Image (cartoon, rainbow, N blue to C red; front, side, top):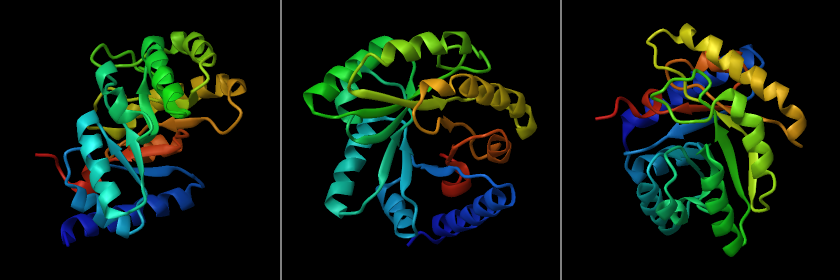
Length: 227
């Protein structure tokens, strides 16, 4: 057993849970497991962690094969770029895709989903800080893309994901997360269920929870620094 990962997870889970209860927040903890061995994923799954995020399609494919062999039950989330030739590794395997940002890709997902009798859940990635180094659509384009994708039968848009400009100061993310929440609120009528908001990571998750996040993506505080 990897005591460090188990210990880090349990310590962070306690911190996350306590903050959530104190501030009356209800968000999913997503363990970002890219480049981490499946053995560590299984270890955390045995401790009760159900949701894991992967950034690379082929790594997701390989880990899903290990999952099948293990007999464990967990949910994969896809957090990386979506390439047409890799859709077969992502769609159907992922409980939720967080990085959809074009109608062309949505059409490809829909075609694959139809062929495989799947309705794929996804989030639209919004570049809320308009950072040229980040992927995602701008806020002003969100409604038009959402309406176009609604015409596709085998893809279900359930909310939004955003990644802000990096800052070592967590508070600097607040203005962007608040803007993302306001955008989601303005589009609430487009959704039948709770609008999912995937925002916040290890360094600023408390700010993200304050501002309405429903999914927190945490890697470093659980698995340690990436090498």
